[in-house]
Image (cartoon, rainbow, N blue to C red; front, top):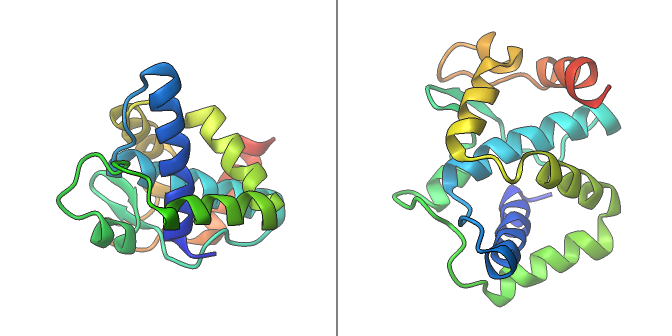
Length: 152
């Protein structure tokens, strides 16, 4: 799955919560940490990646270069929901049920945490701690950690 489609799924969810509950708008930092939790959970539950992009260990925690590139210079990333973003959300919900289940679980578990809380939490976890800054966090490290500490 294209990681930017997953980002659009989170943008649509955030937009809905903003309208219903006056919730904070999804930030670039938050979505990158949520993507880390999606990837780790998907690896632990299904044994495969939710998306192909590598997750890197940055000083601010797990990050994805293509997502940073798409939203560079922005703090909040929801804005107006385009037809494409809505279509990406619908595609995942209708055609990728396993991924949708993971996205809902991650959103329910971590979606209300602030960017700072997600940064602190992800940086305290072994996959980030055991990876040198600037290097790729291995899928195997994420799978093992998430199987033992998150999914179980």
